[in-house]
Length: 347
Ligand SMILES: NC(=O)c1ccc[n+]([C@@H]2O[C@H](COP(=O)([O-])OP(=O)(O)OC[C@H]3O[C@@H](n4cnc5c(N)ncnc54)[C@H](OP(=O)(O)O)[C@@H]3O)[C@@H](O)[C@H]2O)c1
Image (tube, rainbow, N blue to C red; front, side, top):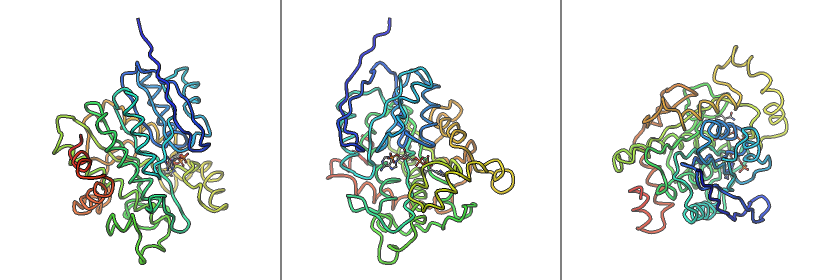
């Protein structure tokens, strides 16, 4: 006999500001959280995971859910194991509220955190309510805080999978993206007079370099400090995926190209110019494999381009840069010595 225990969760939908009630079946064995799981790459990744593991609770989290992602996944699969819980990575107080809700609800242990949400701001410098540069704040800082606050709830051998981008590597073909230059985490967080006028796309590639640096820094520390937990960390390049929401802040002409023209040319681009270009559905298969694939069990400290392990950029292996980012992140996020100790010791 299978008992189904439902828990009612009251959460605030950030798009409408209204309370939103969801029913979560608490008999699932494990949870997988996919940030940015409502559209694009994250949506198809959540779909792959939910299909492969109907016994897992799959949580898709982002600021808005205009397409009703969880309902769409459940309907497609004829299941009920996907839910949407709002998350705003640009606001650290809201990230803390998300984790507090998690702590209060006794959800099933977290089998994987898929840090996939990401944005580009191609215009001028923008800052979050916390005063951080927005790209770095959303793509890196919010995810790091979420990791530290949810670390306690990770299952044995849990996986952390971070969606980065090949554009973090200046030695790869980057489709006209600028080259990242890592000065320090402090400069990424609070641009100086010298960097405040950098193009937004440079901030994006630097945030994607930060993803890889932090992934290596985290994996190394987990291995040194809590090897018995068996938590693994990998970073991932999905390749170019025209048609997703990533270009939402671009100008009208660029958006037209990105949304309407380039998706139709994927086979041609792949054959003639650049092999690492995919539909989000295709890249999702590779990302889902890192999250649930038995063949990558125990793999940690690696960078995947689609299905294959490759070297990430030279800078990403610079331990001084990894440590600078790690120490800045914990120092900035931890409230007091007690929390700093928890964050450093993964408690
Ligand atoms: N598309 C590409 O060519 C490409 C190439 C390499 C790497 N990537 C990476 O792939 C990942 C997925 O991107 P995508 O192309 O699938 O783009 P997308 O369709 O725009 O999806 C991005 C997701 O992130 C969420 N998000 C954005 N800001 C957020 C915030 N403040 N808090 C919580 N969630 C937030 C979005 O939802 P809301 O806006 O509703 O919050 C959305 O669900 C990103 O990390 C991106 O950098 C993409």
